[in-house]
Amino acid sequence: MCGISAYIGHREAYPIVINGLKRLEYRGYDSSGIMMYDGEKMYLTKTKGKVSDLEFITNQEEERKAGNIGMGHTRWATHGVPNDVNSHPHYSQSGELVIVHNGIIENYDTIKKELITRGYTFKSDTDTEVLINLIEEVKKTEGCKLGKAVQLALTNVVGAYAITVFDKAKPNEIVVARLGSPIAIGVGEDNKEFFVASDASPFLEYTKNAIYLEDEEMAIIKLGKEVRVRKIKDDSLVDPIIQELQISLEQIEKGGYDHFMLKEIHEQPKAITDTFRGRMLAEENMIKMGSIEDNLDKFLNADRIIIIACGTSWHAGLVGEYLIEDMARIPVEVEYASEFRYRNPIVTSKDVVIAISQSGETADTLAAIKLAKSKGAFVYGVCNVVGSSIARETHSGAYTHAGPEIGVASTKAFTTQITVLTLIALKLGKANGSLSDDSFKNYIQKMSLIPKQIEKLLEIDEHVKSIAAVYKDATNCLYLGRGFNFPVALEGALKLKEISYIHAEGYPAAEMKHGPIALIDENMPIFVIATNKGHYEKVVSNIQEIKSRAGKIIAIVTEGDTQVRDIADHVIEVPDTEEALTPLLTTIPLQLLSYHIAVMLNKNVDQPRNLAKSVTVE
Ligand code: AGP
Image (cartoon, rainbow, N blue to C red; front, side):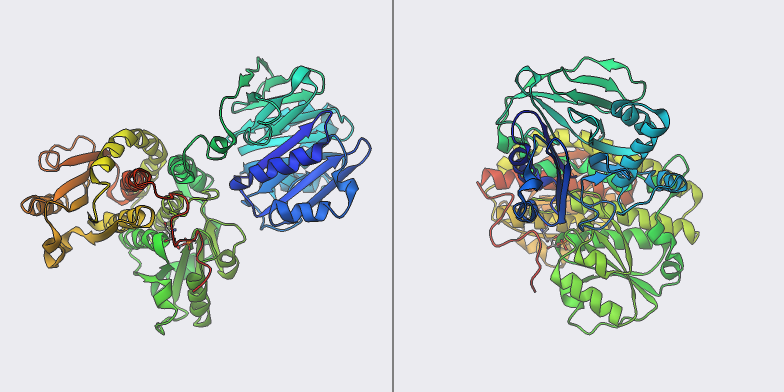
């Protein structure tokens, strides 16, 4: 996600755009930039770092802040590491057009190659610079205005975008377009001024009248005139709906949710879709991951794969172990990075290390990577922050496209990490023949259903909330799972611990009889993942053992389950899918449960005590 903030009207644009970017930093903050037009010249200022770093530069030269037209951008990098040249806005080759963009242009490489044959050169590694030059090329060859050029250019684009485009030759207008990324237009009194932003927070104090573009719509904004909205695919006119906003600034930043954590739980369908977008090609029945293809021999000939990570990322790594061994039959070990780095591990050049980290800055994981590299291993990273230290330290890797995760308790990072690990396991299994074509095809088909299944699953929120109310005062909880869901039991326990401060432990369900069962009495809630896959009957036996000791059982079951329903105190149903994919679903109710318990206990959900979003110290 990135943040867009633009203004055209009678006021000084700079303070409006800059303050708007600051309100959008929750959407991305690795670099930022602003274009100001003073009626004659365009000034472009951009830098790696936060909006405050941008302000420091613009404050050095007044002309960088002059004018009634401005476009700004705060970036969450997806293509091209965060640095000055990759920051937005981007100029076209002629210097006449300028763009800010939120989203991913999937076919940018093909378009870029074509533009190069037509004499275009590029300064940055971004897909955005390709898009503005495509628009310029269309404008030139068609001899049309900016609005028409944008419309024609976008009919050749595959991916997701929210863009704002300005043409120096037509300084009284701005063109906006949307597909898959939000964009709002603030409409000033008598159309004397307009605001454009990724959400309404930058302009709510100036106007409550807003037009939210729908997917595949574009708008031509001209001072003094009504906004004209068109369909991108056929240029047909659409009647714009001007809404009068009734929400607060704080609600907007959290997308209308009470906390970032809840917002991010609900963002998981989109985050998972964005993570497999362009990689899992269901129609072609293939998985395209250049970082794996380029190193396939290393993975397939490895003595073993060692997964290193911390916290929730370590839990994702455990799911990865089950996935890769099951699908690709390659030996996998999972290590706490904090242990691995100090225990003088045996690592050779025949080992492949996968380092998993949301922030890409976790000190223990970074140190473990350096140790593995020093011993000759090939190190592959799975990170959520483009250009982060771990992303740069590893030999290769794949990004999760979860977008910024603000809540300290990791949610969408976990499910997108599992998504990447699933793609890797499927790709390796297909490559070394461990996975039949039918199995491979079936997994891709089932994986493509997961985002919609999570959308539907999130509707159980009220039911989970009612269970949270029953157990919010517990002092100890147990989480049990088997197979692919053993790591989910660990993750569920961590979620509860870190935001509600209730002690909880995750265990393999079969381990109960080796000690923990002594803990069980009528005061102990036990959350059991009992989906109808794998060793279902064994889990049912575990539940009966608990029941006979008066433990309170909250079971996560597959939709339609009746057997567990008859013995558990509460059941939460999740949709059916392949056993290997169930963690993507069984995690969701446990995230919601810990969230609601923490809220009921009035805890600081987004910034729990003693914790930091990224543990950059040892
Ligand atoms: C999980 O909810 C915690 N925030 C924490 O365990 C986190 O997963 C761990 O610190 C690893 O962080 P990373 O993924 O950024 O490396």
